[in-house]
Each structure stands twice: as C-alpha cells, then as structure tokens.
Length: 278
Ligand SMILES: [Zn+2]
Image 1 (cartoon, rainbow, N blue to C red):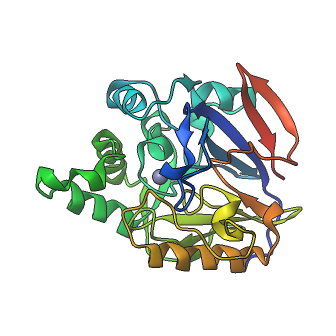
Image 2 (cartoon, protein in one colour; image 1 turned 30 degrees about the vertical axis):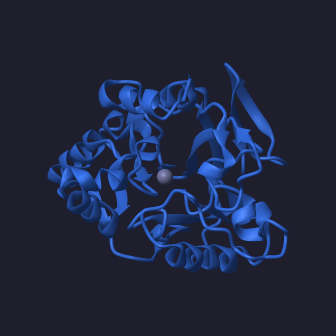
C-alpha cells in the first residue's frame, strides 16, 4: 500500500433520473417508492495528475438516445462542471473507468490526452456479449457501443490500459480493486487522501443499504440491476466493507440518493452539486 495520501477529491454531480423505483436499484425494496437518482463522477488531483474516476455522458449521438431511453431528464455537461474546478479536457491525464455503462464512460472521446484505465475483463466481456444473438440484448442494454468504439480508438493510440485485476498504485496512492457483479469486470478505486483512503465504489453499491442491510443488520443487499451473480456482487461488497473497516464516511457512492451528506458543497450550478470529499 502506497504512502501517498495527498489526493484532493471532488464528487461532481451531472445528471438526475426522475422517479426511479428503489426496487429497480436494489433487491427487496418493493415498498420503498421512487427516487430522483443522481449521477456523478469523481475528480482526483495531486501534483502531476488530474484523474477522473468515470466521466459521465454527453448528450450527443447515441448518448442522447440512451439518456431518453433511461429517463434522465436533468443533465449538465460534465465538461461544464469540470471547468468550474478549473479543469479543461486536455488537462485530464488519467480516467479510471469503473465499468462500461454509458453513464460512466460516455464522455471518453472528450479527453484526447487522457490515459484510460479499465479492467481487461470488462472491455473484452462486452465485446463478447454484444456479439451474442439479439435475444441476449438484456445483458447489454446499458451499453453504448460508441463508448467501446472510443475505447478501441484509444487502444490504437496506446492510451488504453487494460488492467488485469487488483493493482496497487495504478497512480501513486490510487489503487484499483477488481469488483465484478454489477458488470463482468467492474473495478472500484481506493484513493489516499488527508482523511484516509476513500473508496469510490463505481456501481458495486447503489446505496449504503447494500452494505448495512435493509434492517441495519449488516446483511448485504444485492443490486436489482446486474449482469453477474448475486454471489459475485456480495463478494465485491465484502471487499469494499473490509477496505472501509466499517467507516462509511470514506465511501463515495456515485449514485448516492442522499447526495453525499456530510461533504461540503463547494459549488452548485443549475442545481447540480460539486462536493469536496477530501
Ligand atoms: Zn452501472
């Protein structure tokens, strides 16, 4: 484990769905009504690195079709939000992609200088699943093939790092951990900061309840929305739980329905928040 712990971390909200049933997110939530679910990504900076964990999506081409299909009426450009923090697209040195769903890697093409870090299993699995007959389409419905094309372009430019499992210090003080379940090759990030090692969970969890249990009994709750097994999901939740050591204040949930309570809001643009996590 690296001693580097000087990352500055912001969570950037850039979109919201409308009236999304809790039951569509996590299992066993049939009576819990609906939520306007936030969508976010993370900016992490330290000397020499301007890194993103995921990058949101653009309302262009197939990205706009996906936005309409999944009912995400509220959106602001991720680039506009980054500009608020003084970051231009060419400044971004690295993008750690948690998984290939369109709302997590849908702006890759806007960062021509960034090195992209995604699990090999994630990318290659989507090629395999997309090649299946159309009757298997439920597996790939959240995938925008154009995002995979952009990743392919980045590989030709030698900017795509196909990560193979857990890697310490992918960037100094920034580790990635293999976390399959929601998708075949999901990864989550662990970032060394002044207030400890923050876990950016990708979509390994949608809510604290996944880890704490419906009855706060510590019984992990699987997601409703997964390509992999409940078993894989819970093993990934176990890895996150162990990493946190019970300290949920170090967990960053990208679709946090509570919109990151306890973290200071440093800007709010058209109703979308930027919070400082460390
Ligand atoms: Zn996802």
